[in-house]
Length: 255
Ligand code: PEP
Image (cartoon, rainbow, N blue to C red):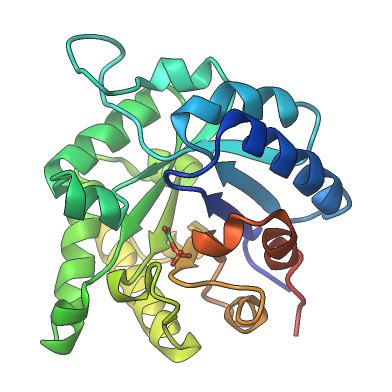
């Protein structure tokens, strides 16, 4: 018996036009319509949110965004505000993805501002944390993950944490490489995340927090990840781009 409802989210990154979005969602929504007791989400690029929002109406698939700004409006060229996302019934915003940190200069500080802005508007957050290959090889995994957690969650109270935040452990070396973490590696860091959350928010808090694994999740390895008590779901990039493969991931088998 699982302690927490699994959450599986597809991060499409910079992929799919409106027509491709519609074509995908027509298939995907049908494919997952019978799946209960699991939360399912897709995070299309901003340009597909309108199309996706319409296509997902009445379905069991939630609309997610790949990022969100902290302010409601203003002089922030290229950014999208929380209320703009709420306007399309976006439920979750992914914040602190390693590609944002690596290519677009996101820091723990900007991540934290985005988390606070999202919460203020009633958006839920998928907060990404994870180490690079060099950091893992030099024994810094725990330090990096801890700093992403402490930095990203600075000033966030326990009520908001429990109500609106999901953590995604995404080792950077496993993202888009085809080289997933082993189940043991993922579980070790998930347990470290739980210990860290308990030390910040009080013993037992992490029992109520969902922690996803992300990094080359595919139909072939999802069942193994989901067989462990500490992994509550997945954030999926490449393998979420085909409706059929993402349907199989969402429809993971309990082993
Ligand atoms: C991601 O971008 O969050 C991700 C996990 O990508 P991939 O599944 O392609 O490794």
